[in-house]
Length: 288
Image 1 (cartoon, helix red, strand yellow):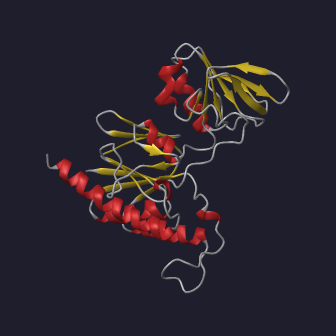
Image 2 (cartoon, one colour):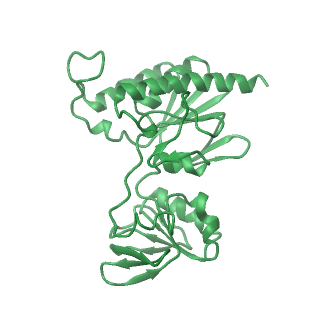
Image 3 (cartoon, helix red, strand yellow):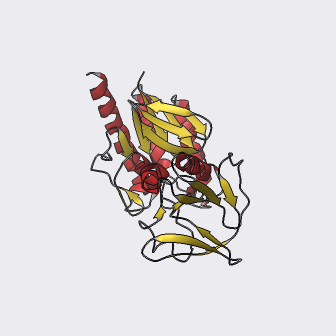
């Protein structure tokens, strides 16, 4: 049976699932939380609701609808996407293979406000370990973050780098850090270097000399996931065509992660569009 994995359980992801599930495609929806929409107290500008509805209630109704028609909804954190004959989604708990994947995780998280971080993007600061590990072979590198995603990125770097340090920026690690990864919990004051990043300055005036810093705050954002598999991005949005398809065959994106109007109605439309295109893609390739 063909399978689609949808990353994100908000309006775009659920809308996608309503079409793929009804088309007889095994549909797995993976989401860690409900993002900004889950925190919205009242929504008054969405069609079909005479009275305001909370974001959480809207999400719950959508998930129940998807479950009723046969979709599988899993609470887990997606750490990466790769391709080896089939698309593979790595989560905190396991791996899933799929014929098609839809990224519907909303907008990417903003980078922390650290002096020098923006200036060194592309010159020592990266947002994708699997993309850029090659450039730091045999060098000292660091990962900024304290959760599962940060550890995942550190493990990607460990086999090729001279050393890997997890920088938690004043926080305690939220997960067990595997052997071989160093940990520095000091608060970060600034990043410094000439043309390229070469040191991290901490608030206690201590210094860590590194060649590369990989940002992995919180969970993997939409553009970080896209970059891991070679999909084109533009700033904090995933580049898609009129069919919600990325440049990677079988990979689609929908909702806030594609930019434009950040509204539920737009997310639902793009989810529906992506769902129908996934159906066409899978049926076309399964007939070959």
